[in-house]
Length: 180
Image (cartoon, rainbow, N blue to C red; front, side, top):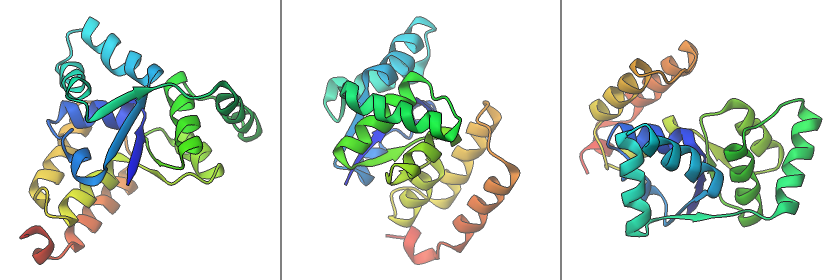
């Protein structure tokens, strides 16, 4: 299974020292040039540790950087206009690339998620990554809960309903799944 990430999940996972979770869930992980600029170039300019973590993953070759076709970007822009939303360059490129390659799209942006779903792309968020990691025995429930708490404390915004649903789903994962 492959994934295209926009900057949000990439930055938050790196910030919480959980970027490696992506290696356990996906065989091919890709970001676009706009996401690279947003997460790495801009992050390094501000001395963000997460930008260094992402850079290392790219240098190691398990995250790749690519550019979508202009025609695919234009298609996404057309959908944005139909839906009355406006994506950032990173989200737009990521949706375009995920559509072209028929890959999972990971985002925390609600509009990008909506555009992706409209285009028939499997769209997921960071909470999905955390839950799958627990379900597959990669991390413990406590680690996932603490990571979400850290993200929320540092500025990730999620509705209280979504946070509640995450904790409910996390609690429903049976103990045998976390003891692998």
